[in-house]
Image (cartoon, rainbow, N blue to C red; front, side, top):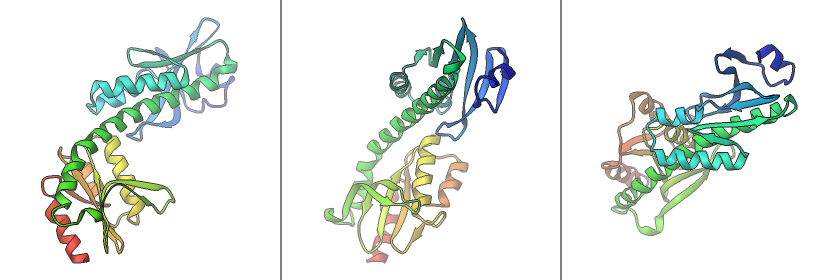
Length: 248
């Protein structure tokens, strides 16, 4: 089945390239790295098979995420969208072109969901590992009544942005754990940039800290340094203490 024939069946194939495995379509769904989700459409009997061609798996494996994160993520996405999962590939078979658009939507959304769940798993694990150390560090200078976890701030977009730890005071100190994976870096960037005036590390009400254990790439460090103060978990305490005392 070629792209021209497929375009006659659905309006969604505005970007279609023919390959050895079928017609490859670029969707509007995104992986956590912000790269687009592609689906491959091939003839199956009298109908069609729509597949992500392992795109979610590739997105996760490329970042070196643990296998258990991918396994549970693929299962959740498969179950939600009623797909087939085989060797890390998500797919759906439909009997006719009438169901093609629905299949494209289901597979592309499931693929993006699987990758996002896998990244979220790692992000939560990173937070779980680092948060107790952040709390211990800020407890050296702030009383327990001023320390909060899972602290939410309404960003300039109107959305709630969650920070792992906050020290509440004359100037709030907001901490978010960051790991060297695209999903974690992107999540932190969005939270900080939406909270801190799209580029300022701080404003009269609060200061943001991106806290890491594993070294970030120079590109990720440059990106996050525009919207937060980056600090290794081993030394975030002294930096935060100085800011806390200045604001008191």
